[in-house]
Length: 629
Image (cartoon, rainbow, N blue to C red; front, side, top):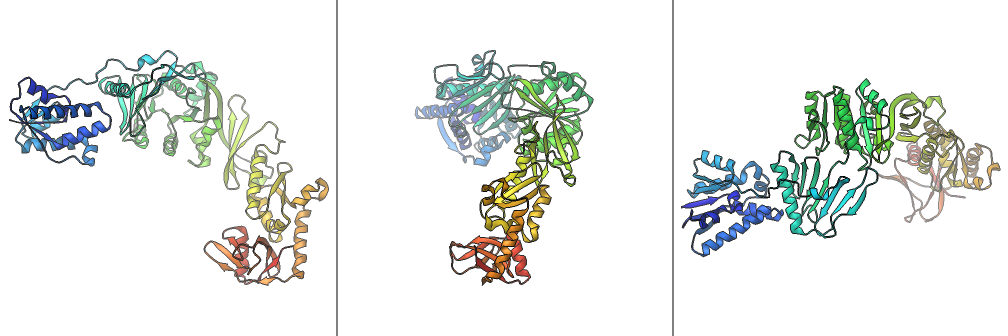
């Protein structure tokens, strides 16, 4: 008699068991190499089933040596692709093929394998599977007290837990004995098996080295090598269940949610109580006859049975969103809006008319809103999110109202600088606290201080940064900016940079003034050190042009032939390495530069200086280089 055991029968030790009880006598046991490969893979992943199966193969070898059975290994080892598709039946099909070729009886504890084999005309002996690792209770529950939010276990370390009330969590050792690898392996396997077998649990994610388990109100992450450097178990459980009435601004928030569908971001640091507040909002909306669904990965919000919790369909929240739009909920609670794809899904559903409540990690309330910047068009943000709730220590700390208005941003005065401005206002006082808008082609978030005269706060700080950036793009030396109110500034540069910063006919500095809406006076650093009485506004600009014009007649300079490459405009000065020179076109000053090691002056293409120089070259003006004074 020939017997072909599949992986389940080998793991359960059914072959040696039947030899020992006399059911099998003088049989030939044909073990497919596919079984050996699968057991080896399981053992390498730290699974107890793999080690049990290898022990059974050792027992079969002993029975062969004792002359009680004949033992043969046949077939090909499974490929990596077959092992990765084991749940689709690739390895089971290879085992059935061995049984058919050997005209043998297939021994299996897998009911699906047995039925498929019978359908293919293979003789089958089915035996009930051995109950492995069955536990009736979560094995780590003993570590949890009423104040325990999470338990952290790892091989070779002392068990730890986060305990206390929200906002006063303590990360502390809860046992002095370090956990062994055997103990951790048993706990990990028991947790995963319990989630598979119990109606109260499920496996949210299972991949090489990581299982995410949801059992009752526990979310448990089980990490194994090679993904982790040791077996690690992290179990998290909510320690509070609240209603919306338990929070500050409860009455105002209720009215806000009920008057129309909203786009809300619930923000806070990890462990602050964001999900607890989101659960309270979900229950409130459900109690007020709204159809509420959740989007979670993993699904761990503690909500009532009327609220359906959806995971990532096919591993993608985009697919979940497409399905939800067919379900047509009034509100969707999106737990953990973190990546760009999450924000895009949140935005798409909100623009489709669904009320959205998203949970976002942020250290400040305004940071939650800023995470939308760059991910969606700036003008769309108030339509996507009109309310930001910041949770701290389990309490509502800040609520912002988000609106948009076409206006001149606070701190600017020129009427022609009006633009769409997102106003972020305190829900409690109604006073704007931040403005978000485009400033000099960049999106800026400007805090609105109580004292608008502080030039270094709010828009003043942003304006100073932008002025410095603009001037440094053309100046070679040090640049210092001094603000004189919301719309006036003095820029101090090296004397040799004055003409470059101002530009021909004052064109460059006028362009910067127009874009920033700020009047800029250009002076030398020497004028700053001389004190405030060193010169009236605008003198620096006029003196610079006059000084350079005076030099034109005194020195004609050396004529050079510029070379334009893909990245630079190169002037061959022929010596004078390290010297400072002035570059002129038909005697008119263009800029000041330092001669490099190769006796060259290189100007990066795309810069304002390069554009002016290339324009002079195109117009066939004579380019000369003169030692700077």
